[in-house]
Amino acid sequence: MLSDAFLSRLDTLQLAMKGRASGGAGGTRRSRQTGSSAEFSDYREYIPGDDIRRIDWNAMARFDKIFLKLFMEEQESAVTVLLDGSASMGEKWDSARKAAEAVSYLALTGGDRLRLILLQEEGNRVSPRLSGRQAFARLEQFLDTCAPRGAGNLTEEVFRAEGLGKGLCFLISDCYGEGGIATALDNLRYRGQECAVIQPLSAFELRPELDGALRLTDSETGETVDLLADREALESYRRALEAFLREVRETCFRRETPYALLDAGKDFEEQWIPMISAAGMI
Image (cartoon, rainbow, N blue to C red; front, top):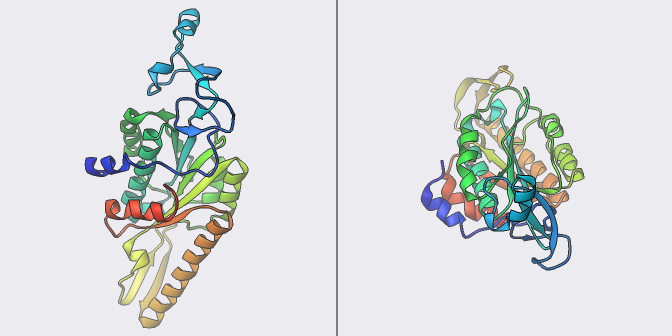
């Protein structure tokens, strides 16, 4: 869990979006529509966490339901966090979860609507739609029920993600898998998502300390590989890692998608704000 001191630091920040908000009410982002914030647009049903000052009491008395007034200019954005839940995330799960919590906290305190989707082979798990600072506790409770397991196919799992309207989407994944993340990002962009990618990798993946004859086991498939970890093998791994990270970065760059590499071997709270600031996510 994130510390209270760290959450207080996040209170001064807001997620960055190139586009404008496209739906909801009571948020702090500008919508694509024109008009002043006092110009009435529509109604929707109240969801716990909404600003009670926007309740239409006359509509409530008439329909026996709580409705919120929507206005033209000030509208909230839909923020979706896609969290890779495959077994390969095991060693960096703590950092990946904290990244999901930090993004979610920024969305909730920024007046946005939030939903977290755990991407897993056996079927994606979806949190309730959340709104308001007080909903952060519900987000943490949902994450408490999540754990990485099974093989992963990021492209298929992203394709299965339902209910994605226009909005901001954070993909938190180690980006492993055949074909990379290009097709997944293209699908999200096609569905109106303004994407950002956070790639957590473990200290072992980034700085392997191996020596001698070893047997490595794939965390997803259980397959084993016998390896002699000499200087040549480690240099070959270093080159492969650099090529892999370069491919991920370039895939994001070509799609104007902010990208950040999260080092799970370092203190999360010390690196998070400088990392996402440099990536243009806040």
